[in-house]
Length: 148
Length: 65
Image (cartoon, rainbow over all chains, first blue to last red; front, top):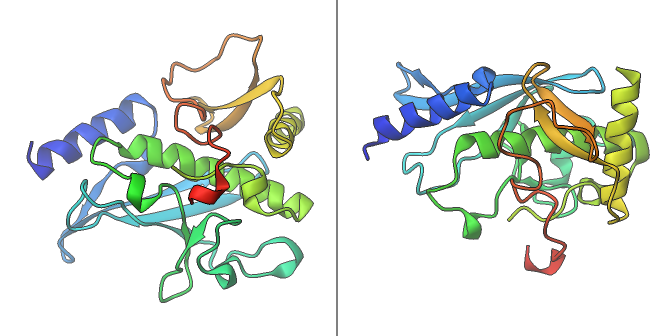
């Protein structure tokens, strides 16, 4: 299967699962594929995610960032990007501009059979867990378990 | 909206205390958001992937991270 066939299949799955907000697009001048879409949480907040598909996708796990809001502010006014790589907050190294990177799958567990609809489900759950963190002050790993 | 928020909170708290809850979290195709549905209700979505199937809440092995 070529990359293009794979991405077409991913988009079909995303459409079937009614996740058109996360369809893969091509950034022509940059020459890469990406996802940029919103999530409207139950708490009434809106988040925008950004994911540039890596060169060796799907063999390589894609990085997913919180594009907006940036900075993402957690309980007690703490910047979530200040946690950097955090097991308890399910975050990885932030982008150079401070965008929070969500840990959705462990690199060691990633394989090419995992499709982006599953990644997006985990990202949406992360946001719901984040909102519970905002309410309770408890770290995100209280509400989601280890990302396999 | 308020009751959905409450159900989400309840489901999340059940997860936090690692006990089976009455609600589980699924993706709702109409609202395009994560919602909590009662385990006794029929799921209102045709989505095949639940949070559980996405491995989200299955593994308590924190040492293997």
